[in-house]
Image 1 (cartoon, rainbow over the protein chains, first blue to last red):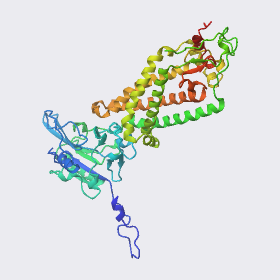
Image 2 (tube, each protein chain N blue to C red):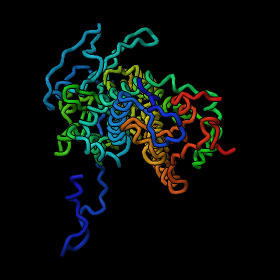
Image 3 (cartoon, chains in turn red, brown):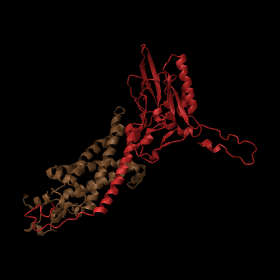
Image 4 (cartoon, rainbow over the protein chains, first blue to last red):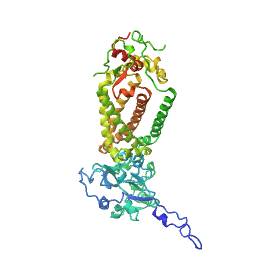
Length: 302
Length: 224
């Protein structure tokens, strides 16, 4: 976006070609999370809190490394741990950094009724504008990843911004900067996808993970956070990552056909009543005929 | 209950302009609390329904304010409709006269009211409106509570959110249809109806024209 202002297309009094003209820059950003090299240190969680100015929240203990069951309105980045027993009886600790996926086709945005409470930038970041949020929670219904979280006192919904405030000034997101193993990468989408595929191929060839692959679900148009998984055939093992995430069909039905049927019915009804009044006019009371008491059906036409 | 109280006269049919109580004070107050709360719900609900109607939220204090009050006004509307149910359910049973009236509905649409079979305090259309609103209110209340406290529904019960959003919007549309017809018929089409919900009275001629069985019940003449 910002780079477009520095890309020249004409130069006055200039001999020869315009430097950089026709250059194809990709603005789509992407976070790559390689779950196979994550050690679950939670440095990304700390960095996220630090950068966004939130304090630690109370943890819950459930006999595992899991500190809390899911992300919170003020805890946007959470490692999901799963002690997975493999077919050969050995144990694997699967760790996945859970946060907003920044879908290309965001369900939260589709469901949101408030003008400009959710925006999608050209670089792929989906961001909540809390000033415009009305706190209805429809985004929570539209999201297939259980990410938007409601804060009751402020009646606003919050989630990961993909550090839009950092990315817009050329910095990488806070979580990426904090990662000690290098399992987190940040860059343009095509390069991250290529890196992820390279890593997945390496896992398949050299490390015996036959089903290793990249998680970039097509059901939501692809995401701007992608994962390398040892077992891409079973993404739900990684803290409930949905196998084929979609905007819920009920949300699509509500925001699509139902809306048009409803609008047509409302407008049609009003027009119909106006036409009825013009055609048939008002209903007026009629005087009671003198013989009405003797014959209650008097005055009624056959 | 003073519904149906009549100013006595020896020759009923000669007193077209004499009045009959159609709605009690309680019924009228309840009606207007319900009407005003429904109009608020309609404005804010339509604001949440379509971006082109979002400005309606601004009229009543802005989006967050509308979101805050919508459920509370929903409870008020629900209470008025439950009271209506309690007060009118015995008058709203659908009988053979209603079924005959229902078959003759084209005559009603074309204002050929004199061709219609006589009906009691409420006609078939009003009874459909009553039961339609009553069952809609129950569905709106249940789905509305789920939407009110969406954040408390755990992820494993998210199907409740999906169901609530579809039920609340489609049932609200049904009530909008009923509401539009109700307002048109009572405030525009049928002269004398609107005033009866303000001051409570209709004329004998009105009762005889539109609710003849009820008219004879009220004036105490046996029907053959």
